[in-house]
Image 1 (cartoon, helix red, strand yellow):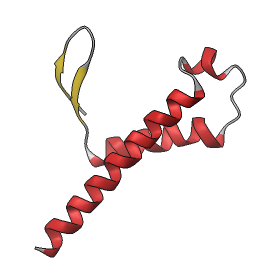
Image 2 (cartoon, helix red, strand yellow; image 1 turned 135 degrees about the vertical axis):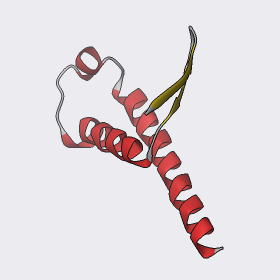
Image 3 (tube, one colour; image 1 turned 120 degrees about the vertical axis):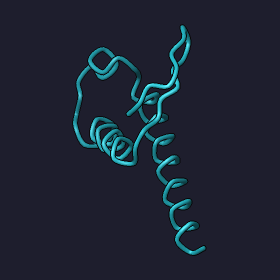
Length: 74
C-alpha cells in the first residue's frame, strides 16, 4: 500500500493485489464469518456499510482480474 495524497475528506491510496485480497478477506470475515455482538460499536461502522465496502473491494478485484486476463490474451 502506498499513500498518494491525503486531505481532510479523503485519501488517495495505491493498493497491491495482495493488499486488496487481504482487505477483502478481513471484510468478508467480519461481515459473514464472525458473529460480532454490538457490531457498529466494536467495528466502528454499520454492518451494511462494511458490506458496501466489501462489495467495492470485490468489484476492484474483479476489474483487476479482468484486466490481467485481457493483457494476457493480447
